[in-house]
Length: 218
Image (cartoon, rainbow, N blue to C red; front, top):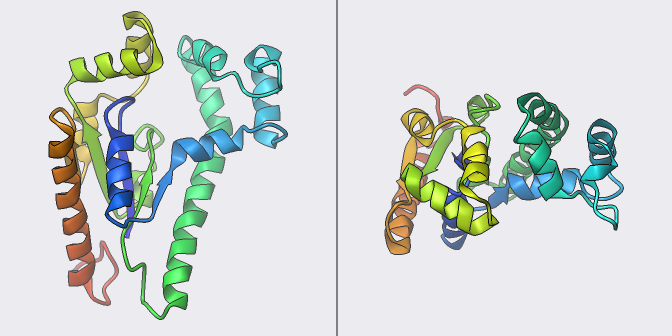
């Protein structure tokens, strides 16, 4: 079962992903993959520099994410151009990761993955890739919490934080489309309890599906 975990910036996705991993889920963080795509000496970084200039590089030749962020969050066209560079490579890496999970399970004599695989995909709905996955889980919190968390986490002022939040779909819209919603507005223990419940439900679906493919009609 291919599970996408999404939400909004500073909505608690990483906390949920960590809990899924602690429960035994194979996990993948697309943000980490995205950083690898533009690591030093990669075609991705060369393409980014060709488009945005040397000003997005640090002195040691690495991507200056703060400088790049100032550019793309102030210019929707620039942001789309950056996404066009990074996203295809990220989704190809995600596809290969799930294929490897399935191949490993089959090599072990199982008809499919023994456990759901969970990939954290921040811009899943914005990039219209939700159809690539069997189930979608959204991590959501109150808008005021999201703003406060982002300001505290990244050291942004309110205007800059709102600019980044407004560049994504509203959390409420994503929650309406999700198969599961984890409300991260409460305590850590409450969030963990919801992740545990979702994990149990996903595994129950696999058990009930038998030889039928996930998502197929009964």
